[in-house]
Image 1 (spheres, rainbow, N blue to C red):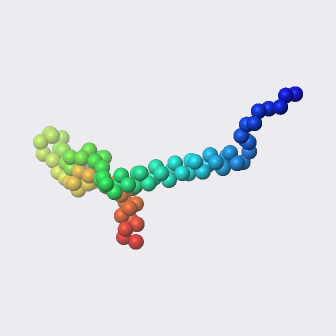
Image 2 (spheres, protein in one colour):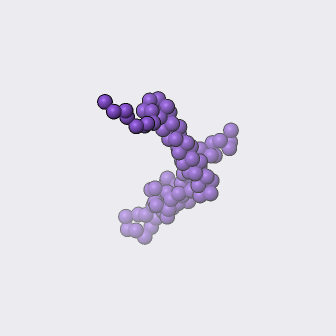
Image 3 (cartoon, rainbow, N blue to C red):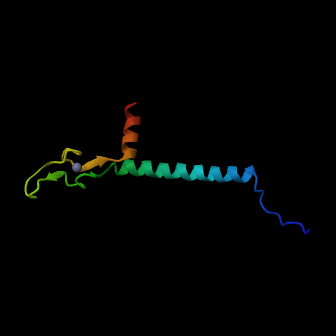
Length: 88
Ligand SMILES: [Zn+2]
């Protein structure tokens, strides 16, 4: 039986390296997301898609969108997270 070439050990070392790489990627992605939430804290309201209006059936009359109270924007999840940390 011939000797096998030197492959990296398939044992726990390799698994740990993979997990570490995944964690590092996750941390980087989270940091990038939170940074983007600091620069662009708001997204369009999902109910009125940013118009801030809730239109009547005729389409002429409208009232303030109840979800965003007429602002047309909502805080992103990361923004809420950042604000929660700020007030603590
Ligand atoms: Zn809205």
